[in-house]
Image (cartoon, rainbow, N blue to C red; front, top):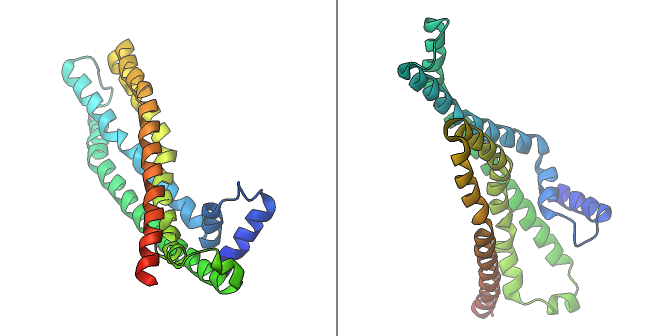
Length: 220
């Protein structure tokens, strides 16, 4: 918690309050090396998923007679090894990534909870009167763990553009211009996704407000 408070104070000093990030202050306080390793593992897992696809393309091309192998034995060994090893390595990368992120999530939630507790102890009576008991309890029980959801999305946000680009490249080689139909559909549903996630965000805000009132009533 002390490291988090120091990092967050540094974050607030470097940026305006509206742009300061609690998330990145938490990451720096918990250790950037472990977080970076988790992201690298997730990216490796995302790339290894394409190895069986590429290997099966070569196998299909061979049986269709559209590809010849200069060294059949060695190349078949690489293909079979890729089909066997790539899913296993991808699973190991994903498991190690999940373990690292679970540890990071626990540390982030604990640091945020302790920081909130210390802040609550330092509040003046006038400042404490401006917040209900439900809001304070909800900060400890729910808001301190919002970083869990953010951590689950960070790896996907990094790997998804690369996966989409590789997928489109492979589809271009197989389908040619017909691939543009799938690309157009992906672009067309972006506004729908924005509206859906906006509605979900508004619902979460309303749920948080109702939770504050519920906890206040149950506590007081």
